[in-house]
Image (tube, one colour):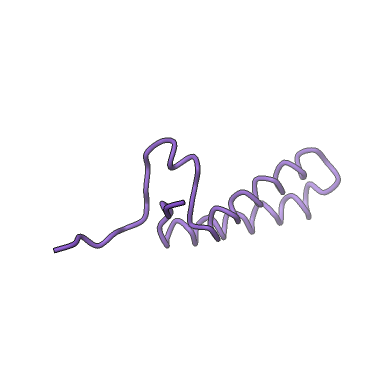
Length: 70
């Protein structure tokens, strides 16, 4: 599994996951929407921690910056 998520993308995903988790557990608790938000938060958190996004790979996208070799 090759990393295809850059550092800024990972930070944004972490913040996004925190916001979704807050909405799912706090505001929309005990509802189907709350469960959906928690699942989306878990996916965002995992892709951020692993540095790999299956959707990015499928679409051929990479936000990871690589240094060119001389």
